[in-house]
Length: 261
Image (cartoon, rainbow, N blue to C red; front, side):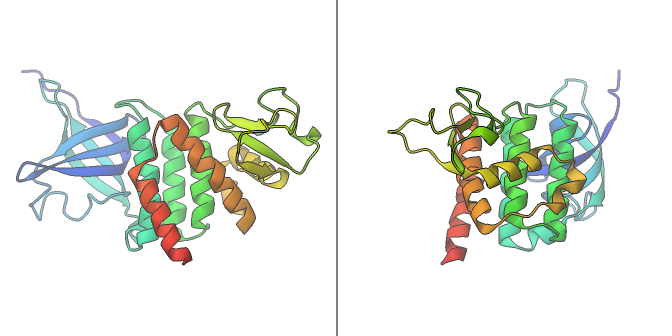
């Protein structure tokens, strides 16, 4: 009998569902193997096995192994690295983290390694847990960089049609075309179509958020107007390429609407 080798990796817990009376199927986003789904034997009822550590958004060190049939792998060991428990204590922070993790869950293929996306998700979860950055700024930044990593970097440097540089636009704002994935100058903006717009100042901030190293992101400062403009573009931009608006984003919008009234 040939035993399959053990695999190990740091991992962020994205989702868990019950599997039978005793087990759970848990999906992780791992640093070394990308997205994986494993069976956690006895995780549903046992107070000894994986006790208190298999929580959403947590970062763990995993050990897992495939069976001889190459079916779903079995989780053998898990040790906690960062619990991020403060996120789960608040409905708003839970909603933000749920949306980010759902994007990764939906977008990533099983076994598709993406270290830069793992580091991005790890960073925003840590900042959200610590409360060091405004939630909406993290939300905007994560979506921007998520799309860039996924190959759909928003075009914020020049007009998506005529290629005129943004610093040569003749007005203080630019329209954003979801289909073209970038800004349009005044000449190229369709007159009969209502497109969201970004001020030149907001465009510059978004470009900075896209390009700065992660460790410097906490220096960014968004005004209320910049946040409003950015959300009106970034959320629909993600949904357009995803092909739908996620359930977690719908809930986040409902929550935000209630908090404003």
